[in-house]
Image (tube, rainbow, N blue to C red; front, side):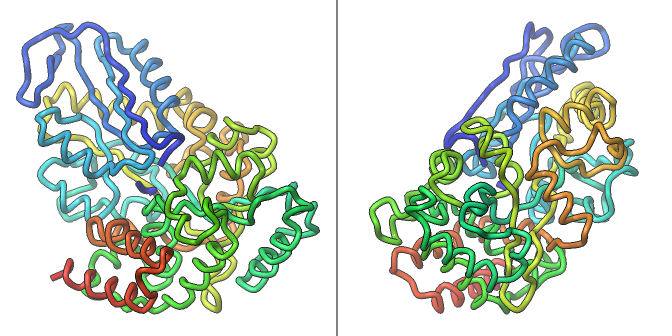
Length: 439
């Protein structure tokens, strides 16, 4: 979500189309295009930085097959607030044809702009449960990006040197023991710390880490979305999991509060991908970034569970991070081209090959059963293995009140780390603000 990420901290990339013909449209476009041969302009405004290059490649292939269509791609992510950027985009009058939404809250927030996609051919192929978050009485308003999972990405070589069998880490106690062993052998292993924790990235803490607790309180994002109050039943177990990471984390100035200056790039690329830490909380989407720094470490990485002590200890959260949506206020020509592009990308033979090999996605659709279309990277393979074995917890953070996870809980976790807020006050504020947002 995930969400809300991220090969670099600040990425804004625009793939500009070729010649633009025709009259201006109500949304600030240079052309709406039509069947007479005018260019049809499809503007995509998307969040997934690590999919940027693959998406641009796919767009070029599609344009070659459809020379009357130009696809412009703008990517905003990697530490930026995509939701705020999307709102600004619409307010500026430069409304995209295709954009991203995250779940029930976004369906409500963007209801006036969402095209009903329930008649699209991919709908019948979507895996059970993947469309619930974007389905309402009026229709289906999003197409799943993919399936993703996250947990503790670990360096297999470091674990082997430390004498730790990752297959035995199926409980909080086992994880804690492994962390202490790694910490005791830091010099021998050549690592600076056991973990790198990106305290600066409030989505990592306020969305993903928090989901480990709330994914056991709520059955789905939709149930979370409909909940008027938050019990925060497992907040103590969540605190233990957070403390385990931060007590043994890389601290830039040696103090826990400095964890708040660690961003995604430092966590994944500068520390994990160079072998300076043994583990990071992150998902399979990070593979490309790790591989870009060190292909050997990427190939020797896996995903460990995120154990909630005494609750659910052998699983990882798996879900749909984001959905493609189409702006219903665009011209019919633009909407038709947008629908055709998305359908081609996920259901054509050529598109499927790119989804697996270029995007490194775990598909949310049937039709990828052949051996050639199985995940190639070890992180995605691990996520698929957890899913196939039923060792998963739901993603419910898309059902949080808008901005609550990052701006309230994520910000309060930063205060907890720098010592300016107690955990008890964090819990009380989370419950209070949830109820206020649901009034």
